[in-house]
Length: 220
Image (cartoon, rainbow, N blue to C red; front, top):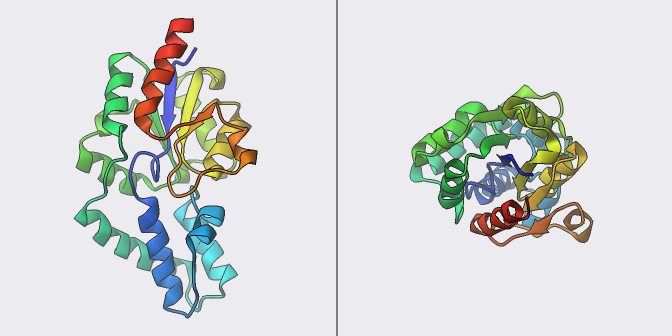
């Protein structure tokens, strides 16, 4: 029985993954490196800003510190966010459905709290969430299961009675490792067969989660 639904943020609730890709691309191009969408989706999607910047600085031997890289990308990201970041299709409808039907609702994001709340408040949806967990609250980020297990603890629902909604392979792996059923709504990349096998299903939009939950409720 699904009693709680746990949302990822970037690429799942908000259309921000493409912004993150563009920011990393801008940074690397300053130092003569190319950076493809494939590079981003394979190695950086769904992971923390700090972990990603450490990887970029080390893998590309950038002549900047991790903090300098973070300062650059976070400053540029604010410019994008001020212009506006869209909610993903079906997000508001699904949140409304879950609240009406008394599901517990949690956010489990690799993002920082301030960044996540800025976007949620901007769209007026922060009040839907009963609990939130951010990357800084756990020792190991996705693809480790820590953040989702922490979300289960906060909503006081056992993992098997939760449902995770994710877009990235790192998030799918994290949920699977936590023993929580996961539905993938792909963003920039459809997961490979290895990760598809870890999911309950792949859906084209968040709106399609509603009939899935309706069917689960009928079977109970």
